[in-house]
Image (cartoon, rainbow, N blue to C red; front, side, top):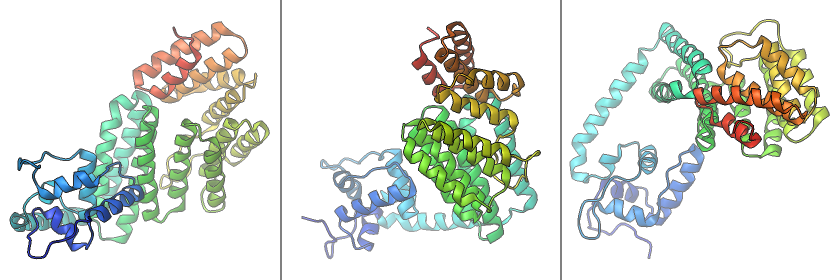
Length: 388
């Protein structure tokens, strides 16, 4: 029978009291929590059986219950806006905690209210510095730092009340989250990558800037490519390119065209893929655009490298020459890009029957990918079976 509030019976925990205030049974709240988790990209789950234990504050033998799993705790905290320790505590002891929470909120609002243009510039500089470390040293060095910065900027955004400041913070958060998503993807954690891109898209919408929205959505397409959802990735990138037309700068549109070219190559659409890369070349400006736009690492060398990746997917023999040319001119500080390029080159040599060249490139790619923690490239290399 559905459990509803029993008249005259006090709530055993703040959590039970909050659910009663919503006028829901435990089963109804579990259904809501599942919908909420999907909408906001949370990975926490909640069963009715587990919820009964949590609202009781003790187990069937009256012993105190332990803490729920971290993901479940975070889900409950996001729904109610209260720490899980308070939610699982007695309602009678929550009044003092409420005052502490009010004071904490005042402090957070005060801190966010002190943000000005110079401080926002400092946060932007920190993003640039982390990107520089990430591209050369990889996920193993910078991933934890990026996670912390995502949380920090998200907190500042949540407690900022100035529209212009919120817009800039939201754009910055979108950039941090897309970086976190790319790191998770490179580390082989596709589920976490998807979650970060969902967060990035939400922040981009808050910024009100189409460039950040299209960039975050397009990057999420690489998760789809990674798990073999080629048609879905193609549809997403085609739609994103259409939305970006005449609303974003040429550099971003060139990047979107190249990304679409990769998806088309994954589908085996050779002509359409190469046409997309030709369009990217035509759009690419001589110099990088304004720093206020989403960051994309794109110049003629990177674009040639990307085209070579597509040619490799298509098993085109000219892939070796295109990739070899890009490798000679590639900035050596782009370690992740080099690992990917050498992996592509190993595959391209292999498809041409040049096995010695394939083994040489695979060996160098394996060393580099291991150094920077790129499980994504290591998996690709293992499929080639050239480094054993």
